[in-house]
Image (tube, rainbow, N blue to C red; front, side, top):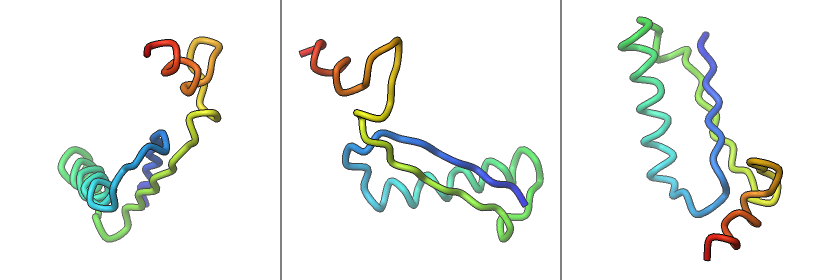
Amino acid sequence: MPYVNIKVTREGVTPEQKAELVRGATKLLVDVLGKNPHTTVVVIEEIDTDNWGIGGETVTERRKSKL
C-alpha cells in the first residue's frame, strides 16, 4: 500500500487543488509503478509558515524580507 505525504505551506490551497493533488499523486504511482489506486493513500499536510524554516529562518520571515 503506497503512502504519499505532501506538505505545503498553509496559504489558501483550495479543496479543488487538494483533490487534484490527490488524483495526480495517485495517477503517478499507478502509471510509473503499477500500484493499485484503491490502496494508495495520499495525505496533504498544511504547515504554518512560522513552522517551516529554510536557510536558518522561517518562511514567514523570508517572505517579509522579500517585500
